Image 1 (cartoon, rainbow, N blue to C red):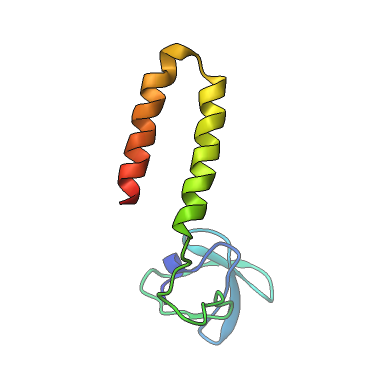
Image 2 (cartoon, rainbow, N blue to C red; image 1 turned 180 degrees about the vertical axis):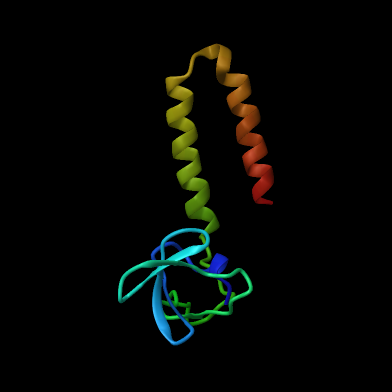
Length: 101
């Protein structure tokens, strides 16, 4: 893994030592002191982010629940806006509903 793929504060191993990323090209060692990490360096990350049990699966939303929530939101907006804004609000509503299809 390259340094650019490790988040700030992320721990990694380089040349047998443990470092913490402190900048785009810099890291501090556990023994203290800053050093520059070469762009070509291959690093071993120590704090890997948790992965999903089933990668690729996304949370599914219930279409009826989404439409009900949007209709509630639309009703509130309609009540708050004046008559002059109603045509634009309705056009935006139609675009939203069309995007769901």
